[in-house]
Length: 291
Ligand code: SAM
Picture: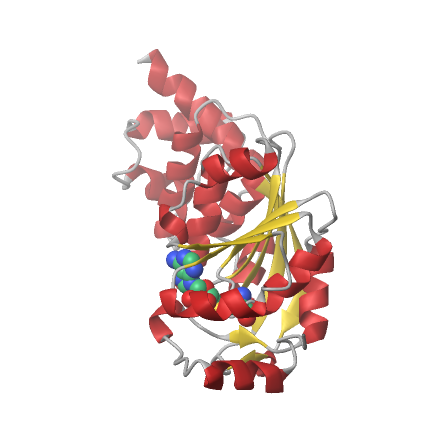
């Protein structure tokens, strides 16, 4: 069967099923074979792997994943795509299509059933508005993950990769880097999709750290401190933390901790590395428990 990465085949398939694109599901289908190869190579998929694909669309990338992986589960929210996937994936006996909202799927149970609880690979080309919650949800939950390779808006990929000193540095950079090592797999121009999105995209691979890169006594406090600092980006770190409802520490404890961490009193949150945030969070956590 001719692959869907051929734009003519995609158009033919869409017409045959009288499929209409739904904006609310962020439906832009890939029509570029080079990009698909880059994604699959970037995701380091091998014949040993179980791959979870989120949002298969009409199955364009799924066809390639089925050939490269041991087994694939593809979770698609739009029931109108299910009969199409039935046809486009009919040649593969190692693909399961699940018609569900990914936010409602018990991914840990799926990983246990399909991969005996061993780390899985996740590949996704999703609507941009749910990409960040899904990535964070996967990392924060106890799903065993090897890597997540995901298509995101170009700016979001930039935000995930950068460190202090960049205007793109923020809470997302720190959250992603706490859990994983980001790597830019490919830039993907808008003309690689039908219909064409309004923005350029990028594929980023997030390889989960085997061991945490920083020692943190209280993860919740660390993340609240990060959020508080970047919610008020123009303020000093000290004021950002003191004014935030997320942080219940006293003003003195905050000031003392900043000093003890060896940071200038006027420092802004955006100047701190992940290691510095972690050190500060551990000091503040200790002081909060002393009281
Ligand atoms: N992977 C296909 C491709 O690259 O051509 C389709 C990508 S399209 C950008 C996003 C896909 O995710 C659509 O098929 C859409 O219906 C699906 N989707 C959107 N929200 C979803 C959700 N919450 N759970 C599962 N699938 C979802």
